[in-house]
Image (cartoon, helix red, strand yellow):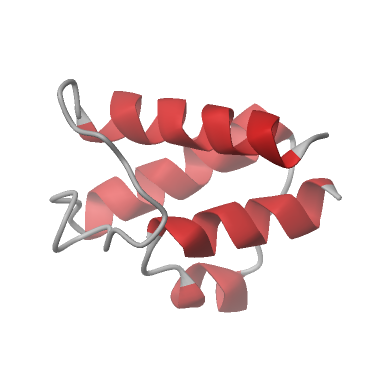
Length: 80
C-alpha cells in the first residue's frame, strides 16, 4: 500500500472519529492539544485504524502515539 493511500485513509478516520469537519490535519498535530481528542477518542481512533487496515497495533506502540505522524508511522510499518 502506498504512503499516500495510508495517509488519506488515516486522515479520513481522524476526521470521522474526532468530528473535524473544517480542520486541515497536518502530521505534526498533537492528537489531544491540536485535535481535541480525549483518552476515549484515542482508543476509538486506534480501534478504527485496526479495523480499517486489518492490523493490530501493539500496546507499546499505542503508548507512543501522540502526534498524527506517529499514527502514520505506526500504521505504515504494520501494513508494510
